[in-house]
Image 1 (cartoon, rainbow, N blue to C red):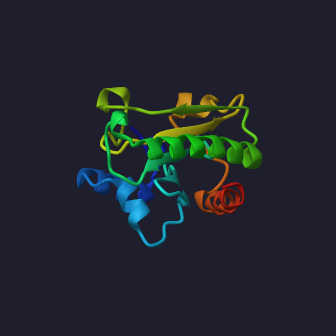
Image 2 (image 1 turned 90 degrees about the horizontal axis):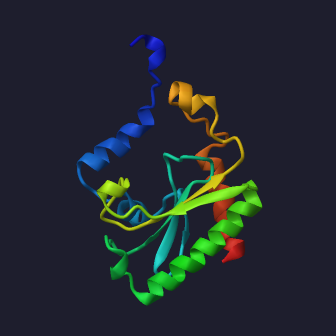
Length: 162
Protein backbone atom coordinates (compact mmCIF):
# COMPACT_ATOMS: atom_id res chain seq x y z
CA UNK A 1 0.00 0.00 0.00
CA UNK A 2 1.32 3.44 -0.84
CA UNK A 3 0.12 6.82 0.39
CA UNK A 4 -2.28 7.18 -2.55
CA UNK A 5 -4.29 4.16 -1.36
CA UNK A 6 -5.45 5.98 1.79
CA UNK A 7 -8.36 8.36 2.00
CA UNK A 8 -8.58 9.96 5.42
CA UNK A 9 -12.09 10.23 6.86
CA UNK A 10 -11.62 11.33 10.49
CA UNK A 11 -15.31 12.21 10.92
CA UNK A 12 -16.14 8.47 10.80
CA UNK A 13 -14.30 7.68 14.05
CA UNK A 14 -17.29 8.79 16.13
CA UNK A 15 -19.47 6.27 14.34
CA UNK A 16 -16.90 3.50 14.79
CA UNK A 17 -16.51 4.21 18.49
CA UNK A 18 -20.28 4.28 19.02
CA UNK A 19 -20.73 0.97 17.21
CA UNK A 20 -18.07 -0.64 19.38
CA UNK A 21 -19.95 0.48 22.50
CA UNK A 22 -23.07 -1.24 21.09
CA UNK A 23 -25.17 1.88 21.45
CA UNK A 24 -28.01 2.47 19.05
CA UNK A 25 -27.18 5.51 16.94
CA UNK A 26 -30.85 5.87 15.94
CA UNK A 27 -32.02 6.09 19.56
CA UNK A 28 -29.16 8.42 20.46
CA UNK A 29 -29.83 10.65 17.45
CA UNK A 30 -33.56 11.05 17.97
CA UNK A 31 -33.19 11.55 21.75
CA UNK A 32 -30.79 14.47 21.39
CA UNK A 33 -32.48 17.80 22.03
CA UNK A 34 -31.43 18.86 18.53
CA UNK A 35 -29.90 16.76 15.77
CA UNK A 36 -29.44 18.46 12.43
CA UNK A 37 -29.76 15.16 10.56
CA UNK A 38 -33.15 14.19 12.01
CA UNK A 39 -35.24 15.85 9.32
CA UNK A 40 -38.69 14.91 10.58
CA UNK A 41 -40.33 13.57 13.74
CA UNK A 42 -43.80 12.07 13.58
CA UNK A 43 -45.93 10.62 16.36
CA UNK A 44 -44.36 7.12 16.24
CA UNK A 45 -41.49 7.34 13.74
CA UNK A 46 -38.79 9.67 12.51
CA UNK A 47 -36.73 10.35 9.40
CA UNK A 48 -32.97 10.72 9.62
CA UNK A 49 -30.28 11.27 7.02
CA UNK A 50 -27.74 8.52 6.62
CA UNK A 51 -24.43 10.23 7.45
CA UNK A 52 -22.55 7.56 5.48
CA UNK A 53 -24.81 7.63 2.40
CA UNK A 54 -24.72 5.33 -0.60
CA UNK A 55 -26.01 8.28 -2.64
CA UNK A 56 -27.04 11.88 -2.15
CA UNK A 57 -30.38 11.97 -0.31
CA UNK A 58 -30.01 8.57 1.40
CA UNK A 59 -32.42 8.70 4.35
CA UNK A 60 -33.74 6.21 6.88
CA UNK A 61 -37.15 5.87 8.51
CA UNK A 62 -37.38 4.29 11.94
CA UNK A 63 -39.80 3.91 14.83
CA UNK A 64 -39.01 5.76 18.06
CA UNK A 65 -39.27 2.44 19.89
CA UNK A 66 -36.09 0.40 19.85
CA UNK A 67 -37.39 -2.81 18.30
CA UNK A 68 -35.69 -5.46 16.20
CA UNK A 69 -38.47 -7.48 14.61
CA UNK A 70 -40.90 -6.25 11.97
CA UNK A 71 -43.68 -8.31 13.55
CA UNK A 72 -43.28 -6.29 16.77
CA UNK A 73 -44.35 -3.05 15.09
CA UNK A 74 -47.72 -1.78 16.28
CA UNK A 75 -50.39 -0.98 13.72
CA UNK A 76 -50.10 2.78 14.29
CA UNK A 77 -46.31 2.57 13.79
CA UNK A 78 -46.70 0.63 10.54
CA UNK A 79 -49.36 3.01 9.21
CA UNK A 80 -47.27 6.08 9.92
CA UNK A 81 -44.10 4.41 8.62
CA UNK A 82 -45.70 3.69 5.25
CA UNK A 83 -47.15 7.21 5.09
CA UNK A 84 -43.68 8.64 5.82
CA UNK A 85 -42.20 6.36 3.16
CA UNK A 86 -44.66 7.74 0.62
CA UNK A 87 -44.01 11.36 1.68
CA UNK A 88 -40.24 10.80 1.66
CA UNK A 89 -40.28 9.58 -1.92
CA UNK A 90 -42.39 12.60 -2.91
CA UNK A 91 -40.02 15.04 -1.15
CA UNK A 92 -36.89 13.43 -2.60
CA UNK A 93 -38.42 13.47 -6.10
CA UNK A 94 -39.19 17.17 -5.70
CA UNK A 95 -35.81 18.33 -4.44
CA UNK A 96 -33.35 15.87 -6.03
CA UNK A 97 -35.21 14.63 -9.14
CA UNK A 98 -33.93 11.04 -8.96
CA UNK A 99 -34.72 8.57 -11.73
CA UNK A 100 -35.46 5.76 -9.28
CA UNK A 101 -35.06 4.51 -5.71
CA UNK A 102 -33.71 1.58 -3.76
CA UNK A 103 -36.03 1.12 -0.78
CA UNK A 104 -35.54 -1.63 1.71
CA UNK A 105 -35.11 -3.24 5.10
CA UNK A 106 -32.16 -5.37 6.16
CA UNK A 107 -33.51 -7.73 8.81
CA UNK A 108 -30.76 -9.60 10.66
CA UNK A 109 -26.99 -9.53 10.43
CA UNK A 110 -26.76 -11.99 7.52
CA UNK A 111 -28.94 -9.68 5.40
CA UNK A 112 -26.41 -6.89 5.74
CA UNK A 113 -27.96 -4.99 8.64
CA UNK A 114 -25.29 -2.75 10.13
CA UNK A 115 -27.68 -1.99 12.97
CA UNK A 116 -29.72 -5.11 13.50
CA UNK A 117 -31.49 -4.25 16.78
CA UNK A 118 -33.46 -1.17 15.64
CA UNK A 119 -35.59 -1.75 12.57
CA UNK A 120 -35.33 0.94 9.89
CA UNK A 121 -36.11 1.47 6.21
CA UNK A 122 -33.49 2.81 3.81
CA UNK A 123 -34.49 5.08 0.94
CA UNK A 124 -31.67 5.63 -1.56
CA UNK A 125 -32.30 7.92 -4.55
CA UNK A 126 -30.76 6.62 -7.81
CA UNK A 127 -29.77 8.20 -11.10
CA UNK A 128 -28.67 6.68 -14.39
CA UNK A 129 -24.89 6.46 -14.23
CA UNK A 130 -24.61 7.06 -10.47
CA UNK A 131 -22.38 4.01 -10.31
CA UNK A 132 -19.32 4.98 -12.27
CA UNK A 133 -15.63 4.06 -12.30
CA UNK A 134 -14.81 5.70 -8.94
CA UNK A 135 -16.38 3.05 -6.67
CA UNK A 136 -15.22 0.24 -8.96
CA UNK A 137 -11.61 1.33 -9.50
CA UNK A 138 -10.82 3.28 -6.33
CA UNK A 139 -13.52 2.13 -3.89
CA UNK A 140 -14.55 5.79 -3.51
CA UNK A 141 -18.04 7.28 -3.77
CA UNK A 142 -18.55 10.93 -4.71
CA UNK A 143 -21.49 12.70 -3.05
CA UNK A 144 -22.16 16.06 -4.75
CA UNK A 145 -23.89 17.88 -1.87
CA UNK A 146 -23.02 18.47 1.77
CA UNK A 147 -25.12 16.73 4.41
CA UNK A 148 -25.70 20.03 6.22
CA UNK A 149 -27.01 21.76 3.10
CA UNK A 150 -29.32 18.88 2.21
CA UNK A 151 -30.56 18.55 5.82
CA UNK A 152 -31.79 22.16 5.79
CA UNK A 153 -33.62 21.62 2.50
CA UNK A 154 -35.17 18.33 3.64
CA UNK A 155 -36.42 19.77 6.94
CA UNK A 156 -38.06 22.65 5.10
CA UNK A 157 -39.72 20.34 2.56
CA UNK A 158 -40.96 17.86 5.17
CA UNK A 159 -42.57 20.73 7.12
CA UNK A 160 -44.44 21.73 3.96
CA UNK A 161 -45.37 18.19 2.94
CA UNK A 162 -46.48 16.64 6.22
